[in-house]
Length: 88
Image (cartoon, rainbow, N blue to C red; front, side, top):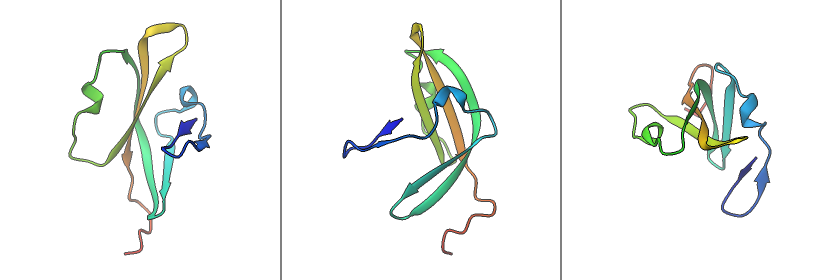
């Protein structure tokens, strides 16, 4: 689940079930963007390296790992422009 600043809850899927190659669609009032999952990795809770600036457009999801309080599940997906119509 993802909660936005207006306290609305949106169910995507359980993040632990996302697989490399899966697609994530991100919709805003400006349109829809599609991302392809490139990374799925368990990281240390203090590992912030996946939040560094990149040259590509990517989305990073980080959540807790059940039963491992010092670990986090990190999912990174890179924007996929193929066959997307952005109104251009």
